[in-house]
Image 1 (tube, rainbow, N blue to C red):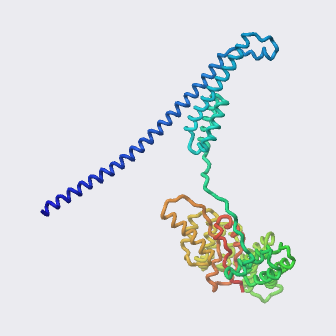
Image 2 (tube, rainbow, N blue to C red):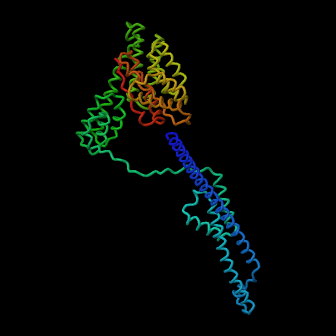
Image 3 (cartoon, rainbow, N blue to C red):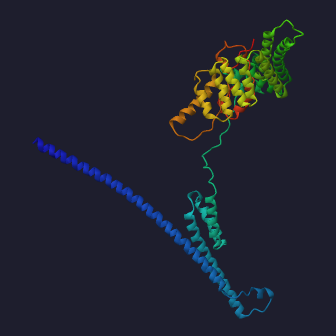
Amino acid sequence: MRESDADSAREARGVGAARGVAGVAGVAGVAHAGSASASRSGMGSALLAMLAGLAGIALQLAVFSIAAHGAPDTSAQWLGGLPDDAPSGDAARLNTHTLLLCLLVQALAALLISLAIARALPRRYRAPRKGVLAALWFLNFALPIGGVACTLGALAIARILPRPPERLPVTQVDEPEFAANLIGNVSYGRGARLKAELQNADAGTAFRMTALLAMQSMPARTVSPLLQGMLADPLDDIRLLAYGILDNREKALTQRILLERPKLDRKLHPALNDTDRRRANKTLAELYSELIYEHLVTGDVYRNAADQADGFAIAALDADPDDASLWRLRGRLALDRRELDNADTMLQRAIDCGFPRERMLPYLAEAAYLRRDFARVRRLLREMDSHAGGSTLHAVLAFWQGREAGATNSAAGPRDSGGPRAVDADAKAPDAPDASNSSNASDSSARDAMHRAMPDHLSAPDAPPRRPT
């Protein structure tokens, strides 16, 4: 009994499986039949369109034949005032009937040709359908045979020319307005808050003056560009205060320069030895570099400060060729002048003299980026610790390491690259030698070059350096 039940169950499962297979086969057959019927209908419509086009061309040729074998034109006699006889009137009526017949046949031929050409057009040219048909009909009605030639020639030219990029569904949106009057309720972003308060024309003068005074405690490198922009403010008080802040910072460095320069004169200071003069040359190189780093000089004054910094650094290195901080300073100045080979040599010399290689990698990567040697950029940044430096360096490392990971995981095409900036890597080592934090001469123009090649979120100002003592 149990064996018979098992046999019946197996038979039932077999029947069910056979029905399932038959159902799947039926669905597949229906789908195949549907695709076959669709292809047959497409071929049929294309064949009908071709026949319609040929019929239209044949009708246009027939119109030419009818017009060529018409009766003589008697309109010249009528216009000349000659007597109108019976044969002339019959010929005029025959010509009128022939003209109407030719126009009717030409209209039908133009319609057939328009339908055929519309079917042969690429899909991107078929819309709007009514407008396309109307334009094709008018062209073929006005230019028998020539309309077909013009249309086919236009399609051939369009196929040869490069296709325009696809239009993305882009919609226009309004730019959001920044409510500067509500900035007082924000507790984060001190620098951006002060900048917004200064640029808010609706704020009171006393309020803006307070914001400007508060910027004196911020790093000079960060606020100097903003203070220079305030020199064009319409309010005299704002202009004078901004000029005073910039002038005080420049005078402080200039006074220190004036105190150090006489030490190089052996007549004024005969008691100083070579070590003291080397130290004076090094300090002067640092101070001129500080003028550049804090954006206190521009134009010809900037170039003079760079030349002075490089000259004093050379003089100090003549006395002590193993000063790593001065080689670093000269390397950054060479990087600023786009002397990339000299910059690499001097930066490598600084590393050989004991300067930490990890803190020199951003500058070497910047030189490689300016050469468009992106493989070397990735190789240099790969050696850096992802947690080193400030927020700007973190963004650069994340960007380039992300590119490397993407290139490793997939064989994607090249993407637009944003180069690394030589950010102030000294911010992570406050106990470094004095000159290693003040030789920042190349950041000014290097930042401008990187602004054009980097995403906006990677071009924030560098971490402020420790001021030289």
